[in-house]
Structures are given as C-alpha cells and as structure tokens.
Length: 338
Image 1 (cartoon, helix red, strand yellow):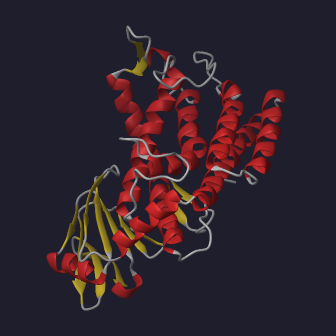
Image 2 (cartoon, rainbow, N blue to C red):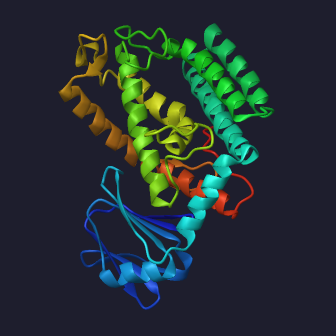
Image 3 (cartoon, rainbow, N blue to C red):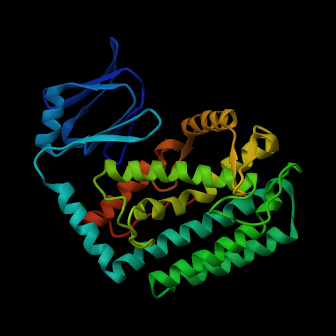
C-alpha cells in the first residue's frame, strides 16, 4: 500500500477496503493496514485481488474519489464513477489542449527533453561503471547539444524531428552497452524486428505502453489523444507520449540487464519465414517473470522524493499530467533519472 499525490495504491493481495465514518480503512485479514480521512484522498487504485465494500464504492462516486481496478500486472479493468464531474471536464480540457499548438508544444518539449536526458543518463551510467569509451563520450556530447536545442523547438513536428535525431544518436552506440558477444545490435529495426535485441526492445516497449495506457485511463485521461504523437486511428498517442520518458531508464536498461546477466540467450529466439525475430514461448514467460520482479523494485521518484515501486511510475506520471491539465500545477514534471 502506498499513498502518493493524494492517491492510494493498494497492491497487497486479498486486501479489503471499507468506509468507517468519513475515513477509508484498508484491512488484510484481521490486520488493519491503514486508515485515511476521505477528504485527503483523490484516487484509489486497486491492483489484483482487492475487495471494496459497496458502501465505499457509492461514497467514492458521491465524493468524486476516483476508484479504479487493475489486474495484478497493471492491466486496466474498470473505473467506478459517480455523477459526471471532474473526469469529463478533464478530458474536454485534454482535447482542447491537444488542438492548441502552444499547449501541445509546451508538453511535447518537456517529454522529448526528458527522453533525451534519460538516454544520456544511461550512457553516462555505463561510462561510470565500465570506464571511458570514445564512442559513448561523443554520443553523450551530441545528446547534450540536442537537449539544449529542444528547449527552443517552435513546433511539435520540430520536436519529433529532434527526438528522432537523438534516438538515432543513442542507438548508434547502443551496441557498446552490450557485454555478451552472443548478441549484436546494428541499429533500431521496428516492423518487424530482425534480430534478438530489437525483438526484446519492441516487446518491452509494448509492455510499458500498456502500463502507460492503463495509468492514463485510471486518472480519467484519454490515452488515444496525445500532445507529441498525433492522432491516428487505433494508436494510443498519449500512452506513446508517456512511454518516451520510460524508454531508456526502464525498458532499455531492463533489456540490457537480461542480456548482460545472461538471463536470456541467443537460442531463446526464432526467425520466422518473413524474417521477423521473436521470443520463444518459454523465453517469453521467463522475460515476463523478470519483468514483474523488476516492477516491484523500489526507487526514489525524483520529483515526489518518495520511494515508489517501478511499476507505479506510469501512474505517478499520469497523475502529475492530469494535475497539470486541470490547472493544479504550472508545469508538468516529466520523469527524469539522475
């Protein structure tokens, strides 16, 4: 159980939530895990086998306390909602902002800057741990220059161009981060991935995108309407926007850990007739197991300055974004690693 940004995150399985006077009580069996004044709670997010009393559900609807349910692995299931109040207003404001070039650009700049900074941090971390590397040093300098330029981008399309150039620079040296000679990375190939490293990257990016979409739905935002990525039928544009902040520090580092610790082997992949490379079924299960374990690891959130499980990071950022759109904060603080 975690309380961040006036949001309760209930992750302990078989917990039971009920209303006691004007408070929310969380119990697990006979043990009371916590009791909070309802006035201090804005959202309750339940992950897995969590029970909520009908009276508390009704109370949440009446008081406009968001109550959302997810699977244990973070897939969005449902949201309990009372009379239409804040959520519809939040989405309407989101849509207006998405149509406003200046509003979209302000958020897009921050998200792209965070992505570039996080890519740079991953490279610098490798240099600190394994010594100087001419290629990595050069890429770090180029990314620093990109980071300065993006602050002056005059349109979302210009932001996207800078993001693409920075990604090319980052992936041009990504192979330097791989210590296992059984794997090689020549560049990012997406549709379809044609080597094991690209297959892993694509698979993990998909998982993080689902995490981001679920988090956005849980706070009442529309994951299909973004600020950086433009609207396209079937594309979760806002989830892809949020994904940019997590690619390098969460997804890429997880992939590198699997490879460098030999938790995944070249023989764990198959090449289909089309040339696409994908994980074998057993290997995919092993990757998903490691993924769930990684989500439980606690880190210090740089903006909140609190310990947060990795798996809750998208929910924290979705809440921060919703607060900014509602007008509660002047700026949206993207996720940055040190």
